[in-house]
Length: 246
Image (cartoon, rainbow, N blue to C red; front, side, top):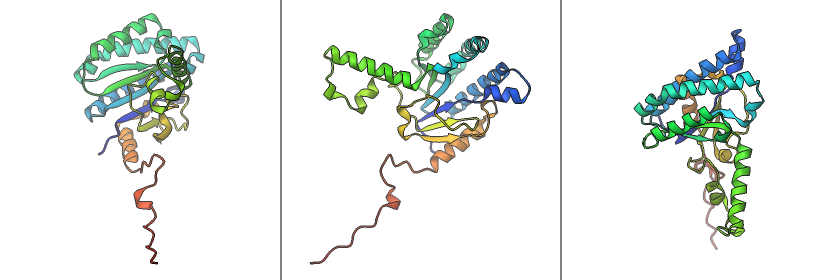
């Protein structure tokens, strides 16, 4: 099985999964967190290079305060618990998003986990926390404008590679495969710049029901696609024109 270099996952459907079972939404988040860590371990075992999980968006602050508070508590509990497994699996931990707006104890744990795992040489695991693709692009634009004002770069220097270097996620390659669960088919403000040529896989299951077979199905689907990046498939190209004799 050929692997993409970078898989990104929009983990969607925890609340609806819980509602179907007549539980409160937080029960779905607890189950979803367990699934996340099982997928993380599996991706490390199959030697995936990069895994990014969309864990909390800038729009998620609109949810009830009790739910947001419980989500932060869940992040604290599981990340502290899983640090040893990250080390055992040689995983380095990273974040993207405005994490400085998260509770102080969450910020401290995120920083600690990064420091503990930063020398690991295996899979790079990135949590997108308080992340929004639009905001990332705006922040990059502001930083680039400041560089122009400071005389570090000129407007004529700007191209896609330079702009990409100003993105907070510039340490990551663009995602090859983006998986979204719960049968929703949109990006929801995730990796708007980076997803230009990503392949998408939409799974009907809610995230708490997503399992290793679903991950394998997504990778198999990826392997059966032809990625042309705006070019044409060599198999579909026109035959050479006949020579014209004069």
